[in-house]
Length: 585
Image (cartoon, rainbow, N blue to C red):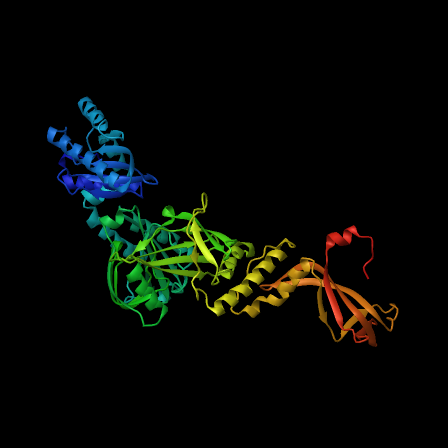
């Protein structure tokens, strides 16, 4: 690429392109345009919490005049006020333009730096030329008819792929009956390179599958994802992901959409849509729409009479913070505690409502606040139990324990994880959990605690299995196994028991105790977990009948004797067996 003659380039294009260079180097950077007469663009680069580096981009490409220096000084003073109003600390201020400084310029800049509390440096022609060499697609877009070339690239994509990107022009599968996967590797690579070669603001990924994305499943998306479009072409579904190369991409070339949102009264969709409008809370379910028109980069926009739209929460990870939630008894004794990752509030479009949420590390416990900003301020609390399937029992136990203590009469408080806990305590509202939800949670909590005990006695990593009904979890058997492993002796009643003895074994006595052992095996999600042996003691038994089976062994059926039908079961601890010389009957 030949060197750019900056003195021959439009002043506005210089500021746009140079500021975009910086945003591409620092993807989290954002631009602030001057509203006063000093001109230029401030590019603010987050360095750490409330700390920023600021690049003041000027269009000057020839030696500075006194008027241009005055403009730079006004920009310097303005950004200092802008930062002070927001509680920012400016770590560095860079005067940036396609012009290297003279000795006199540097002396002037040193004097300017002394007027404020942050250092000032010059980023000149050598820096700008270096950035231009690094980002030729930005140069092409702003200076070399790149906008038109980018549109041509979409046509190239269509030519390379051999298909129209519309559902109206279907491909005849018979034309590709002998196609092998290896035949299309180069073509797929060319498709992606073709889409990504020219666009300075966005890059594109795509995938082809035989089924549409699941509409109601949670969506995990990268923070760079600006839009996702799914098209049905024949029997296949093509998903296009449009990624912003930097935060300013969405301001430079915004993605716009027009549609009518549809939700039937009384449904989860209607509730989510109402709370999105009232509190800014991102809907958790897809919303049906009609008359949809979406303008997307790369020619991927679409129009449709009907569809589904997911409104996703922005990436707030870097702004999250920790808090501790405690449940306390009426006597102010801490009953349960959990650490939460809290996310900053989201506001409604009219600024009258806000929502925020926090979640524990397992993702099972979530707290939300829905607030009318008033006056007067009105706050609604909501607690949600997430899916426990596939998680480790010890990870979800603290979350289920919190729900177990959400009872009227108890109190809760939210405080910093470290430091004083001298904060206000609030009463737990009545009906925060329905009786059905509370009972369901209590059963799950006992089950999870039993699995935690069982995990200590096996090398098999236990995860909570998938289930549709509680019966599928074998909860009674799991609770009993945990009781045995903790040393409890279980007692019950029995009616008959059959034992197979060797052919040469003596005949059992007429009555007395009978002691036996059998494997303790637990079914966890279809996997058999071996937990050793359990001992079974029939306190008083008599041989009701003895038969010989086909192998010649004795099959003895016992029944209770002396009206004593008590049976006791305990676990044969391997450590106890090895340390004892007493034989086991």
